[in-house]
Image (cartoon, rainbow, N blue to C red):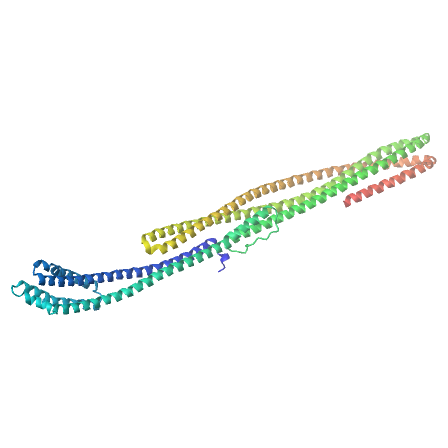
Amino acid sequence: MNLKNMSISMKIVLSFGLVLITTALTGVTILYSDLELEKNVKWTVHTYKVLQDTDRMMAAMVDQETGLRGFLITGRDSSLEPLNSGEKTFDDAWKTLKSLTSDNPAQQSRLDAIRKQVDEWQRSVSHTAVDLMKKPGSEEAAREIERAGKGKSYFDQIRSLVAEFKAAEASLLGSRSATMASAGSMILFSVILSIVVVVILAGGAAFALNRLIALPIRANVRDMERLQAGDYGIDIAGADRKDEVGMISAALLAFRNSLAQAEAARREQAVRDEAERQKLERRERLAQSFVTNMQTLAGGFAQSSNEVAGSARNLSATAEETSRQAQAVAAAAEQAASNVQTVAASSEELAASVREISGRVFHSAEVANVAFREAESSNARIADLAKAAGAIGEVVSLIKGIADQTNLLALNATIESARAGEAGKGFAVVASEVKELATQTARATDEIASKVTEIQQATDGTVASMAEIIRVVGDIKSISTTIAGAVEEQGAATGEIAQNCQQAATGTQQVTDNITGVGRAAEMTGAASSQLLGLSEGLSRQAGDLRQEVESFVTQLQAA
């Protein structure tokens, strides 16, 4: 199983589990060795007690011999006190040794042999000599028993048996001391090994947790800071992981993509707005140029009209009828021209405005819809990010609880080791190391909790920003609806223009009727027309220039 894909709680449980298992195994080993050591200490104390009672038993025999000799020398009953007390002490010591060595048949046999020799010595030597000393006239016989060396023979055998008994106990003491030393070495080795293993496992766990959790989270924080600064080209690492860090990275990756798409849409819109602005500027320049040219041509027309007026005054006598018809034609033509110009200008401007507004409304609606969908998607992803941050906070709380519990266990272990005294010092060192590890884990957990809090605060700010973005996009959609209503109003204006066009057609028909009358009058003024021919040619050229200028303006305006 890949450690990266394990959940944070599983990583922490695995890390502390290895340390706890190692500590538990070490504790079992130390406990077993301690039990063995305690057992050997008990048997060693038992052996020393046997040796002590053996010496007490032998000292009691010496007291009996000393009391007997003193009584043989002095004949006073007070000299028998060591003999009597020695017999009691011997009996007590011998019984104690029989009880202490009840599990050792060889030592039981040696004690029985010692008892047999002591009983024979008491019967054959001490009691016989005391009885003889108490009979008048038999004192020398009692002393002769001692001088014959019979008591010494018994004592030599007793000392030999006691020495053999003590040698056996000394052998047991040596083997038990060796076993104690081995158990102590085993405890020391287990403690040292456990410390080394726990330190290695704890260090490895700390390194792994830092590498698998802390470092990726800090990398995500740096990525968030770069996204906040507007750097949308960064690579989000860890999105392929299956743990909580991978969930954060995946949400951050989706957030980065959404921000990048929104920024691209904003830039495209800025480019389109700039193109529209430049287009409007070109149209404004063309319109200004058109106005200037029209003013120049109008001046030319005015001059030519003055010349025509002079010639017309010369023809007034012969063209009265023509003048009347011309006035009617002029009025109708002026009305028609005015209507047609108004209609043309209004139609062109309204057509352009309608096309422009329609295009912008359509584009604005598309942009608003895209922005609204992206904002809602980003808001949902940020909400997921906030939930993931909350989940990490819960995991961090769990980690801190485990660390506190570990610290408490280490404290209990320290107390128990203190109760154990000298034998628990090694375990106290292990407990202190575990306590220090729990403290370090708690501090690291506090740092992770601080970072998680910063992530949650940044996420909350981002959620508020996304709510504001959604509100602004909603306003844009409302504005688009308003613009659509304006387009409908432009359609109504276009209907009015159509009505004006109909009126212009009626005026044009009147002009046609009047033109017929003018034609009849023109026959009467044929002679005068030749005088105005030159002027008409000049006006014709200027009219052609005006037409070309208008056509050029319209063409450029449409191209713009």
